Length: 446
Image 1 (cartoon, rainbow, N blue to C red):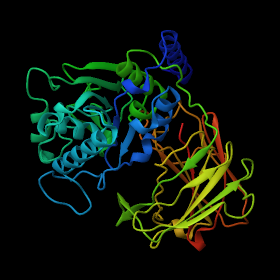
Image 2: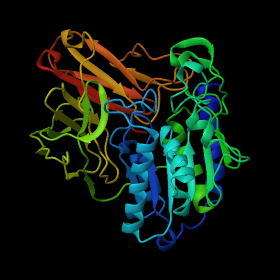
Image 3: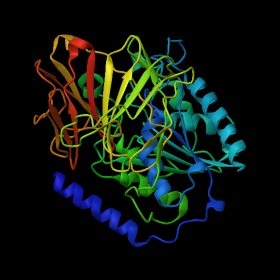
């Protein structure tokens, strides 16, 4: 399907949903929503989804994004691995979060929305952790419910469809839990973790034993959105429209994000140890924020905000100017000085989490290292426009979108603008020198 047809289909779906939109539910009728991120991810990925719920009248105090401390799964669920978590550990973390949300909100039940591995955690909690008593509905987005593969040599992995973990979750006449409404959202054939071929697992040509419909569950409402990728099943506007419709019984009035008058930002600096990303807070990291020119990426003046993190890792709060472009500079011991350029923030958020970067092999010998990043989706050749310094960055695969990072190594030179573009959004950064331990990221969010 061409990019034009996919976008036309997406527009038609949004128009149909909007055509039946009605007045939004009163806040007193709202249930708290707990959002659960996926493998190796962070609560920060739910930022735009929370903004869309808020833009449709959902009370910000009823929206909670969980930050699981060690988000990466073990290679074998039964064997401990440093800085990685078991399925049971993830379930216990979610159970604690739900208990806390119920206490803070005063509501007896919550809604759970999860992406990828986060859906495993939700299902495990509902079936094996007593969670069904406290949960009204579950929305599973791009969750590989029948595994990513079914290979004998990896039976201990959470992601093995024939392993003990998923076999137990999927046992029974239905694959859902009584008393809880279930929605699954999946792509037609564009999800890298629901592929019949093992190419994305480093084994091209080897059958995975999994089909495109692997995320669907017997007993659930199963929705297919053509053309979207693995992360867009959770973080894209079309996925949001389906979530909102399922939870409220009506289409959202807005799938775009409505701006608010005052924007207050906060978040924490997250850790990286030995190349393993965690969501544990980093103390002693200095964060500087500069307003920059959208045309050149040059700083408009002195730092608008500077803070060195304490044990909680928090770098804010910071009051942002509406419409302003910002450069976040993260200086954490043992890592490259990381410059993250962001387009304007339309709304407040306390999950603007920042992670310092590390140099890849050979990066430190470049003049500068510039990166284009899309945390909430992947780059698709033919589907998307993505350019870095006027070039399509190398290393992004053809076919099913599977990469969210593109990188260029630039020659040494004076500071200059470096333009990054993703579809209709543009960010301009500066080429800070690698020899001084700088790396530069244009981070796209829509």
